[in-house]
Length: 444
Image 1 (cartoon, rainbow, N blue to C red):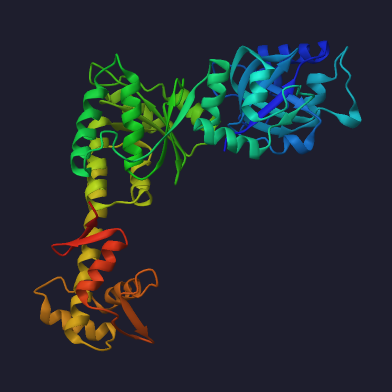
Image 2 (tube, helix red, strand yellow):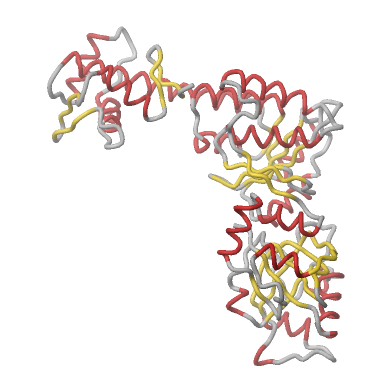
């Protein structure tokens, strides 16, 4: 969960440190001697390195990437930023702060460093912030601190996200909206899927209304089973997936029908800055140059029509996000060959579903206890072709005997129905799937 970090720049020496280290920042070459090459100190090549040091180790240890940082001075907040990284480095702190006029204390050094991105100057009085997080109205920050998680949870429950709460307080920054998979029109699933797919494609070509396209993309990922967020006013991320994988998604509507360049290096930098596993660009289509950039920089390109096709398959066949993710988030362009991979997954699921149904029917026909080999012989007499071998049958029996289903009972190496085959199908339905024409599909 995103937290809130506060540091103060009240004294003149502290304010000068803030102006130099955070407001102005440093160019990479100024700090190159202290930072390892693979350390992420800034989110993109277009911004300086911004950082702040503290000696308050216990508070600093709780700071996490993505937390919102607020700078306090003289009764209000003068700036906000987002935490990018942290580093315990005495030598760098000494280089930055052991200057004339600073109360540098080698035994209480400001060696616990926090790096920032998305810096912005603001003017916000302390009183509305105190009310937001539940502090006493007379509270004034002293030094470096992080708002307690219990207060953060209360803010999250009230505003849907900490980012939205701070955005409303400061009238700046982005708002994060949690998106659920329920259709916003209240229609049934089949009509909702058709509406979402067509709306996605139409919105992708409407460059005058980017918010609509962003919200539809967020809803599409939610429908695929991912925990999805729409980031209103986000500069580098329009949609974010946080589970079961972490991915940032940039959404680009284009009236021309295609995106020339995704600005891959910037998006890659933001992916790394956010600590995300994947970076995705969604647009109506992509030029060959954009695909080349994506392959080189490890981005995923996904056009609106194929996203709609993926949602349609997921809705109809009940694909899980864990099954989709390895195909969807493979770097490069999501093209027809990847839809073929999804169809192969669906085919395997259908084969497994047909096998579950056949095993139920075979157990009922045989009656009593049977080994997987005996079930195989029964199926040979029932099916014209496609009879699974004994090992595959045993896998199905193990699944059907799982306590969550309890359709089949197990006695050493033998199995029997715990109920009728028809009742077994009903139990499968209650588990979230329904047997229809010999195929287990997602319940409509």
